[in-house]
Length: 247
Image 1 (cartoon, helix red, strand yellow):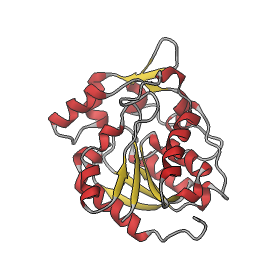
Image 2 (spheres, rainbow, N blue to C red):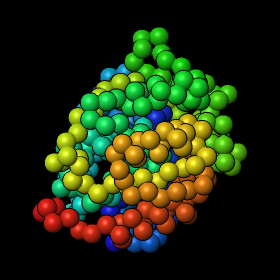
Image 3 (cartoon, rainbow, N blue to C red):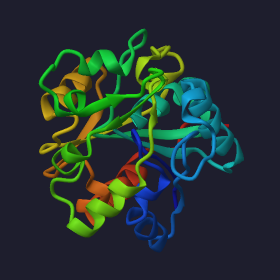
Image 4 (cartoon, rainbow, N blue to C red):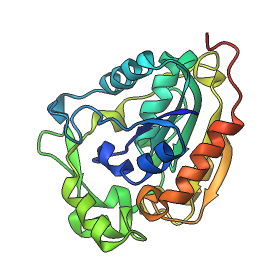
């Protein structure tokens, strides 16, 4: 039995894992898929949210767990799990990035995407007048996030998206080898991702090496390939030994 905390990406909520959670629970695992501040059903004004708020939300969950957790981050959720690992390394069995953004220390995730001006993610982003949140052009969402997702799941997801706090993308992470670097890392690359393209995924892994698993799918495997994703997560939990410093 393993414990998983599943962290969603930009604009989404814990709801995006709704197909994966029951699959893992049916295998006997404990799973938590929280809403980050300002997203999902959380009522925090998104314009007020900082990266530290995300880290605090996940850290509080980690502190309640009786054993180290497999902490999974999708897309922009990768920033939150990285910074959380710096704060709570002994509470984490492994970090798993699902086509996740993984900036190195001193960099913000926006710097990871700035090098690809044609990226659909950048071209479809619509920043609020106050500059504190952003959404995505609805016409671009199917191709960007849900290209290989069923129409039913695609449009249900689109209707649940909320404005994303921009500070999560603009705040540099602060990571050390002693803390973040001591946690085992896995990267699940999604080869047909139109939001975070495969060349960027592989460049981030090259800069911050992880054990890598390849999925031939788009940006949202929790909808398009939930069974395969659940199998990979379970395999990662089984392949990662207990950490001697976890006590």
